[in-house]
Image (cartoon, helix red, strand yellow):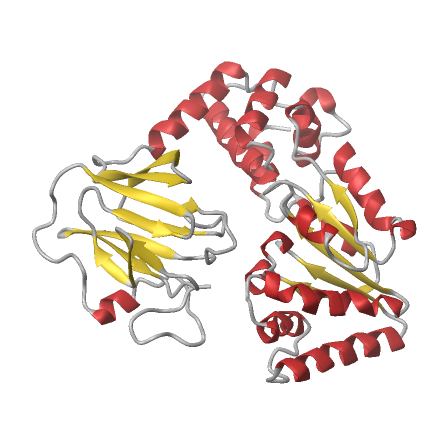
Amino acid sequence: MQLTDHIEQLKQTPRKRFWLGPAQQRALAFLDDPARGPHRALLAPRRAGKTALVAEWLSHRDATTIVLLGTAATADNPAVFLHGFLSSVGLGESGTTEVERRNLLSVFIQHQLGRGRRVVLIVDDAEQLHTNLKLELERLLGLSDLPRFETLLIGQAELGPKLLEMKPGIHIHGMPALRPDFACSYLRSRLDLDSQPNQLPFTPVAAQALARQAGGSMERLDQLALQALERALADNTTKVGVRLVQEVLENEHREKQPERPMAGQLLLSRDGELIREIPLTERVLLGRSEHNDVELRDPAISRHHAMLVGTPAGHYVVDLNSANGIAINSHSCRHGALTDGDVIGIGPYRIKVILRAATATGDPLPGNQSLADTGIMLAAKPSPDLRRVK
């Protein structure tokens, strides 16, 4: 195969087939083991391929799947939680109250079982499950008396302690992220070279270097491997070695550097201990979800809690209709202009604002309608000033 063929192979989305390394094979064996009981949990680091592995597992099973995504798991309202399940099977518009939705979900499950179907109820990103929903989840687990009914919770390590407190018992399996010493095996599978192992266009050391940079993420390793192959093609080289990998990583680092000087920085601390320094850019999204610019892990913090916005007149912070709000210099507020040295309080975290220069030339806060436009995600019930962000 030519480098161009390998490049096209890496560009394929989704993957032609799922790579089954030793850790993935053990996880599949756990999911297939009837001795583990009807309730199981799969724990793995972020972006370790756990969701893709579950999809591979389900592809070989004849089952009705009910899936709750992590966005619904963070709700503190059981009716919203149940609506997430019902939406996955096309019944999201049915039932309005908590009791109606609970009964409807139970009837749907029993109807599928009555037709001889196996039902698998899945909660993804389950580590984000709101504490108010523990009883609701236990009700669903209580359906285990029904034959051919299973539940599977997927999440990160933080899910483990929560599961130990739940009844009935849930069998837990931990799956590690992709290890660098399996990088060659993964890339051979990804490039469809299992039958031609000597044709892998990466040296073992280069493949491991890419895997270490990927931090255990298969998706990230795909991206880095693709960049390395494209660089090799441009250099008219047929093999990716350590030198070329180093060039790719250095080039990526340069591209991530800001094009203009930072307006300042944010000093993130908790319990008086500095955690990290963050560049202050035109938009900094803060919250509990990993999809924020700054992830703040604490149950008191909403998925998308607040946002810092830069304007020609200065910077301001706006609360995204969070559950517990924000404070500036210990004063609760919904939004406010920022000056050098201000301290923003979000749950147990403190964020000190360091501005490089006095850039404000007036009030940086826009009108209420403009503030409404800062929401990054539509919601069912926007407040007068801000869009609700979940």
